[in-house]
Amino acid sequence: MRVASKKKVLVFDSGVGGLSVFQEIHRLLPQLDYLYLFDNQAYPYGELDQAVLISRVNQLVSSLVEEHQVDIVVIACNTASTIVLPSLRENLSIPVVGVVPAIKPASLLASKGVGLIATPATVTRQYTHELIRDFAQGKPVELLGSTRLVDMAEEKLRGNSVSLDELTKILLPLRDKVDVAVLGCTHFPLIKEEIHQALGGDVTLIDSGAAIARRVKALLLSDEIEDTEEGSKSIYASATPWQEDALNICLKKLGFNPVLVYHHPGV
Image 1 (cartoon, rainbow, N blue to C red):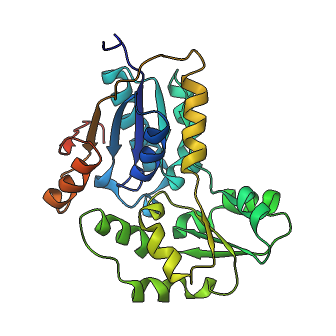
Image 2 (image 1 turned 90 degrees about the horizontal axis):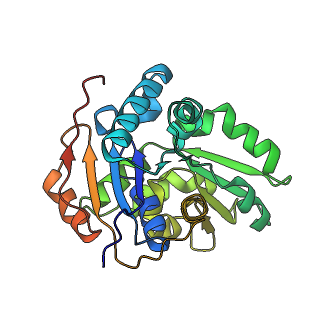
């Protein structure tokens, strides 16, 4: 029997990278209803003016939350999390969970050094450097910022293969310098196997997905809902995605309907 009201989770990102976070939450909580919204009209967020980013995210997220009576929001984007969480939490009366690069757990595991693979925006942000200062445990931290890796993940989700030669060249500055690497962008777990190969296979890769899933569970299910029926999954984009048909094939495998364009007059 279907429970009258399933809890609803909204996962938000600028692209499809946040699907890596959705997968972790869904693995832990398959009985919830999921909405995924990506603001591809303004992708990539790392190149967006901060005031514009704050305005877009607040308008898009608040509108969908109200429309669908969402119970919790996950900002599955490192760039947006560092900028938009305070205003979003002020505007919404429901929990908002963000993404933080997993510097602390990586540093506890590392013996040689930690690599942070992220977007150029995350690598240069003061917030990231404060995390390293506070949680690196004295371990050396190598920073590598790449937008190309984000595009590779987007391409892979549309059925395109990842060039290991190109990836190896991009990640070359980290080779033999680190034994643990942080995937500091939610796109990167989508190409985790390829990154592992490109780094030589002896490097442990860490991302925040599982920790976010546990946080969502703690916030939502303190009064446990006994419901075993799998929830619904809907996906929205702020503009028509490129290679839409190829993307929809992959999304279907994840249980989503074809992408619906979500128009908001304010953005």
